[in-house]
Length: 292
Image (cartoon, rainbow, N blue to C red; front, side, top):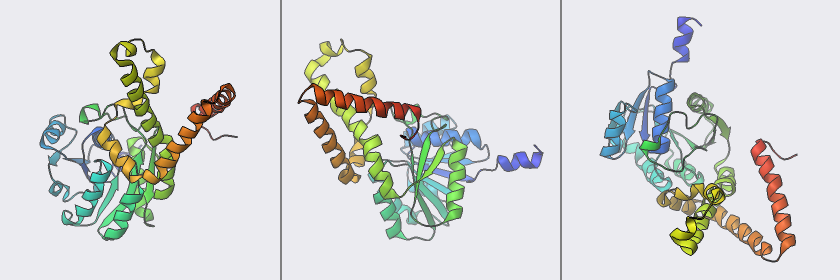
């Protein structure tokens, strides 16, 4: 590869990236971008102690504890909890001084898409985003540069700006993610089953088992309980926001699960049928393919 080609390959799609919320996801975006594009400038926007840690570890070049730090960015990533992102997006026009691309990383998409439509600010090119990556613990200390490697990253555009989509897709590709495009409505309906219900079930299961068996009972638990409840350490404040912004999809999912559990109470035939179906869909899941 020629020197010119190498320089072009290393040319970042965004030269100044402001990340609002420097936790697990926001911090990992910074680390991945820093690893991929050495010329990109990263701005951390969070509490003072978090910004200080980001600067000290060189995950960020600049930072601040309010949205004024976003001025001059050509990409702003809203990486706070879902309902906080909604407020930040509404306030953003006061803090930008030119055209800027904006995305988020929230687990629900309809409300933030509607907020962007209502704003209708021509300076803000908003495309919703949701990286399907995470860890059992949050915070900047858990961030890592390879968090998105090979993982799906859903984009939910609210307009028809092909150039903005191409630019953001190139950025996500550079972080290691695999871009999928969905409508906000289709995203929220799907996530109710493949993400939100599993989290609620894991937390509810751990609550019931812990309250019933206490310390002495949990000391007897094997790997099955640990594997099944891996998600139970997730922070409640983040999931409260997710549940409140996708309630209409989550409630039917919970009802369907309750119906299955009730049928299983009826006896061995229902248990056998449920286990057979579960084993089939588990094979499909592990194979990473659609059913035949």
